[in-house]
Amino acid sequence: MPRYALTAMIVACALFMENLDGTVIATSLPAIALDLHEDPIALKLALTSYLLSLAVFIPASGWVADKFGTRTVFRAAIVVFTVGSVLCGLSNSLTGFVLARIFQGIGGAMMVPVGRLLLLRSVERYNLVRAMAYLTLPALLGPMIGPPIGGFITTYFHWRYIFWINVPIGVLGVTLVTLCIQDIREAHVPRLDIPGFFLSAIGLSCLVFGLTILGRGFLPAWETGVLMAFGAAVLGLYVWHAGRVEAPIIDLSLLKIPTFRVSVTGGSLFRIGVGAVPLLLPLMLQLGFGMSPLRSGLITFVAAAGAMAMKATAQPIIGLIGFRRILVFNAVIGAAFIAVNGLLSPATPIALILGILLVGGYFRSLEFTAINAIAYADIDQDNLSRAVSFASVVQQLSLSIGVAIGAGVVQVMRDSHGGGLELSDFHWAFAAVGVVTALSAVSFFRLAKDAGASLSRRTAPAAQAVAEAKPGAA
Image (cartoon, rainbow, N blue to C red; front, side, top):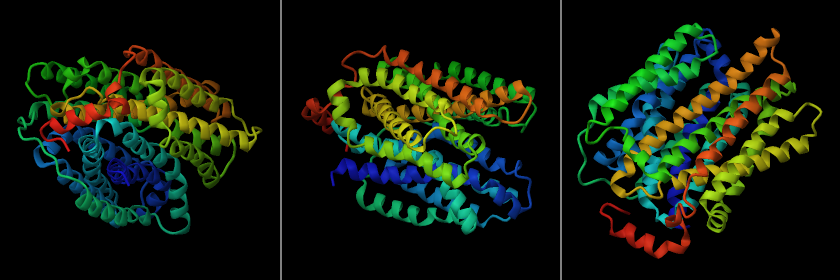
């Protein structure tokens, strides 16, 4: 197996564990609440506490990796995440469960961005598109197969097994990382931006928490609005702070690099639409079509099959057409396949639904691969860790915004007719997130025609020579 593929698969397995865990638990919340003698609404603290851990610790992940080594930190993150999973499975109270989720979130916050950083530092640039294709799969597979797996385990076994299945995966991940991954660290690491860490932690946690509970009755609407406004204000203060320190924890100066800036802006818009699909599609199939959770899960899994088919074709397609054209036209195609879900009805043939989800999954995965690769096309070795941390923060925010927009449109439409949820409510939600997704094409259109040329096989010898000449490169 090529080295880039082996490294990518090791990192992808860890990321898949994290993505799967977040969606599996949502299906099992009622059973967990019953077992712990708690209100199911209170159990949503387990979801939000994990997201808050991510928001607080992701910005520091790049600095920690530079200081202690990417392999060391990635391996430790897998251990922390796995131990947190065990603690979740052993919890007998709401307090213990929430604390275990916070601990697990610390591992997740380091595991996702540091895993991506490890891959970027270990793979030659001309193989980056192929490697990124593997990392796209966990983001698409987890939300799709999580609900049916969670429902199956909870129904036929016990909810605690949901967390304990992470143990063998974690042990395998630590073993493979130890045997197959090189430890890479920076020779000169600046001091940690402690004021920036606290400002970003407070601002991002308030904003992410507000987006997570928006429209779900967790807090009154005005309190949620105040919380989000406070988070935005603190982030504004961070922007002021970042312009006055030498090494800010989230380096906004990276936005001066065109390829990175477009990946952040356009990629965020695209992720907003994609982030809403795992929420809207299962709900529409179950509440609008009357399907069982298991049947809807098996149908949505088809999109993951389309994503898997993409990884073998991403490199030749992007090499032939170019990043700019792929990103622009594929954004519109991906948006169309999201919006067309709003035209489905119980009378739609199952074969047609499966075909739409299969092809849509392929194009979304191809777009993600291109977005993730172009982000680091012009990032040098010294700025790589800061770029990964920055991109990871933005990805987390955009996915949260996508869920908030999708849920918000459904709620507004439901309130407009004053009854329960109707199938048309989901149709409007798919149309809204489809429009947002299509807007990403405007950002991608600003790319230079030769953007990402360094990632092409045509420049492989030069790219490899540059990579080998850089200090600390694999």
